[in-house]
Image 1 (cartoon, rainbow, N blue to C red):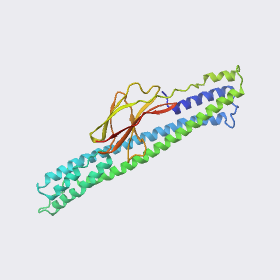
Image 2: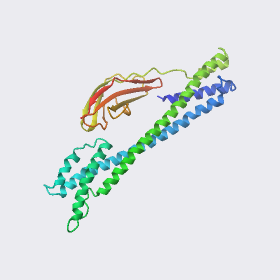
Image 3: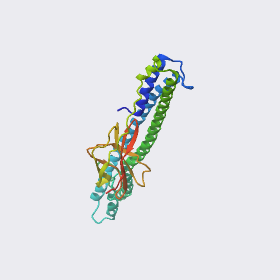
Image 4: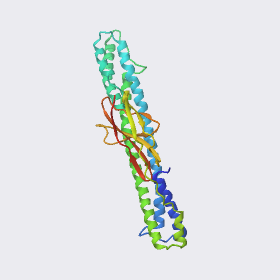
Length: 309
């Protein structure tokens, strides 16, 4: 099914068709055909800007995820390289349990582990520099501690870029929603004014039949049956059957209590069941709900609350 802005645009085109064919000088209050046509065209302009902003957000997220994965790899190999370089009773080995104990369930946790790894790595390098003869700096998977720090800096930048692109996308979506709502209100106002102007039986009144005024019934929620916590901040979600009637799109939404202020995370809902990675830390409280949408609005399921493993 079409999204709401697409339906508003289509009805705007229908309105302009009837208006321009039968009485182009007609006004609904101060609203003219010229102004309305411009507003209808603006919907697609704003939709293009929103789609571009959404694409840039996806690109930023991909870049962030790639850097996070690279840093995670180095944060695994780094402690191994340190351990392999030292004698079994070396005091630097005491730093490794705290480093390895940080589970890299999200980029912030990866950075936390990397920050703890840097000083341990630098201690080993200092040993190498003081040795006779001098030994080269320690490497892990072919990388140096400088490479580690560069990845950390790049990931911090990428995290900020994602937030910037998210803000841009939301701003563009807001502009699209406002443009579509303006046309929706104008369509409705014009329709009522046109009916008041032209009596039944006239060509102008009969032309209203080509305008789609049907409305979709509200969608039904998709009830969540169970949410089962798994290792690494993942959750298996199962749904009750029979939900989601009349929906044009279904989402599974979640929020981490104490971290998120609202249900800002979402993925396409699979009614057969699905597993999602939330990035929640062990012991964190995570809330889930489903969202069913169509042009008539949105319907949410009852919230399920689960503790992350």
